[in-house]
Length: 253
Picture (cartoon, one colour):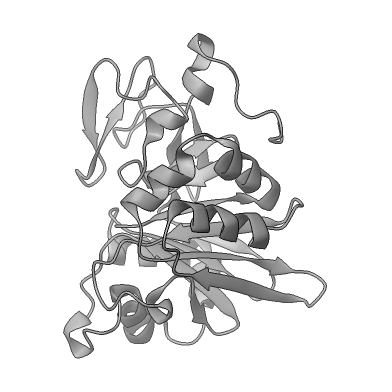
């Protein structure tokens, strides 16, 4: 099912490389490829790196080497194979024009045409084509959101460095990072109280969210929230809120 994590490169380094057990959890759930994308201002282009790590330690070393040390926007994708071969070609992100695209979820978009290729590859080929400009407008993202459904998320890095997300409201946030789901990693590593008290079914039925004392919104979700394209999404409590220490001190406020 995979996972995508977005935010500044500095915060990605801080949380992913300094939270005990987090890389191990992400790798254990998604061992079939690791990629990242960001913008290189010096070369004025969107860039990507991919690898097929053989261990969580190799995944950690890849991120430690490739993630920039500054505040530019970046995205990390860890893959669990559902369609297509487990190889570097099917590792995210996918080039789309001069930009890059990451996907989390499962799509039924003509996958039988070439079973060596992933569902993301087929969706780009059949619907998005060679230009990701459709994803750069709120209207375009709404159209794509309705087409792929709430169980899928896209993150697109445009050639200009602009990064946008389709179905961002179905993910969660922590320390200005966005995680595309809560089922492909151990959320309790960042919010130990996540599984406590009552739960409810949310969005497409894929995942249970702990609602504790969260507020209710019209789409049926709960949580401290921010909005993008008119939707809201949940903010994880930093290391369990008042019952645990704050997050890594290296992260931006």
